[in-house]
Length: 324
Image 1 (cartoon, rainbow, N blue to C red):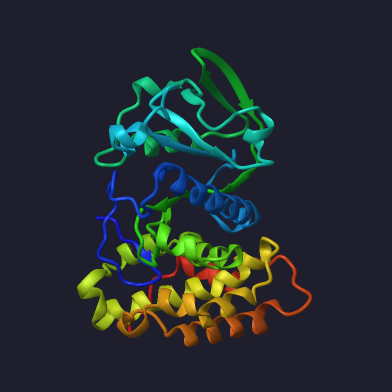
Image 2 (image 1 turned 180 degrees about the horizontal axis):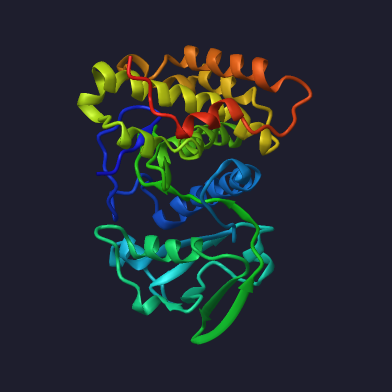
């Protein structure tokens, strides 16, 4: 069972296609804009914090999607070049420098042809393509289709933390991570400034860096309703506090002023994302989260800011949770 760590409790599940958050003439474009925005933040942070992660991938700058994520009417001609295609390319990325454009089809990743790929359970084919793309070392070789022609492109991609990052088509103010996928809901991303989006992503990346899903699973910790009681609640809250603390380091390493994190938790949006009146007991109050991050900044970062490896937090990855 997947265990997701979230900014606030949500009963929604991953499923594609879902009811789109935005009612517009081009819903794919609306979500695509936020996908690209999130990817730009993510690529910056995944690169800057690569040394903190134990799983890595090439940072190509590609945002992929697959036909099976959409209804036929919604997909339109977006997949004219193949059932796995480029949704967007991050400007200035390795993929952009290689001449890849949105709408290009992905015919092969390395030696693996996309027409031979199969879905993993209920996950879209895009996830299978991501696994193939993320599993490579060194330059990434792709077969690209455009206008009925296929050509081979080699991307000299830098390395970063491994994570599948995406906007989830929901209007609720949530974000979540399961140790492999980091999702930010459309409703939250669309309301956030770029700095606020960086804070949201940094918290979820903190769960991935500190391997919270694995640690909670190993400890037999439950989420959801039973996660609100006893030992489950204590340990669920502990990992949320760890993610808040390390978010300051992740932001600083990527060139952000970590003070944007406490500012977010004191903002109107941060208070709403933090749960409001219906906040789960596994999370500190937004004000408490702001103070927690400020304490981390004062104690471990100081001024001037310098790249930091948060050794006091990383050391916890291989320690069992306290049993008291």
